[in-house]
Length: 418
Image (cartoon, rainbow, N blue to C red; front, side, top):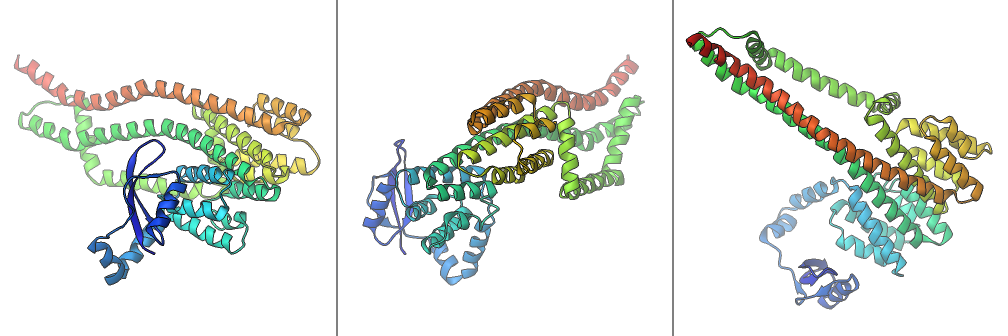
């Protein structure tokens, strides 16, 4: 199938080149208009470079290598969120599933997601259910996604479910972005500070040490300690420290990969003074948002609790959800088992209890999720404003400790000269 190109404008008025495959230029022009683009220049056949021809025909190894590398690309939550929102918009507008998948496959920038969409489209065209096709890729579409699609297919409200999925993913992406930004800042600053400290200790301090040695200057105890530390870091002790850190990281990853390790780490995170409350609020927000979205989409309560248990992201919360699921299986409601779990605050249990009494538990869960999303956002802003001066003080202490060690002998030499 030939490849065509032309210049188009999107709904914001921005112009760019669009490349698309099609049977003819007229077909490509019609499809671009259906996708909401305004065609600015004539649709012409794209001329490919000699290197592209060589990689495909003369040297097929390049094509296979490129395909394998593209398939290794990870599908990010942002890519999946855009896919869900566009899919929901087209389904809600009356576009057929196969046609919508065809359009999404053509405009998805992620090569792996594009290949997955094309495979799903082929299977749907052959008569398979959309939920079954999505379930073939659990690394991209988790149980939550597949379960909601299956409920939408069963209830005939796939368009509404897709819109809820898109909204849920956008909320999850926003929450995850806030947490990631709060964690990234101190980690990056601490890494840079430690790197600067080691660089000054290994490369700059020895220059001053040689200068002091040539002057036969008597070094203060603190400066001598830094020089001994520099010599140790450059020698076998430094290699032993690096090997020890690597061994500890490897052991931590192996321990965290086990169920016992994950449970221990997740419980310990909840007990840390500053990180614990944020982790708890994030877990409660995710639990209430996921459960409320599933119930509103028509997923049965037991199935919804099972999906929430598998997608909780915290082993302590997963265990509490499993206890709730077992209690519901035995005929109890949700509120009483929630009270027995220490992870859920009293406000959550009381609002869910009111939701059970009024028959609007899904709406109540979403209100709780909105409240805790706001709480997480405010807490992260407060932590970020607190960490900024602390990180500056930390950097100043590390760099200043080296600078003081280098200049103390100079002061002693000046006093001796006087």
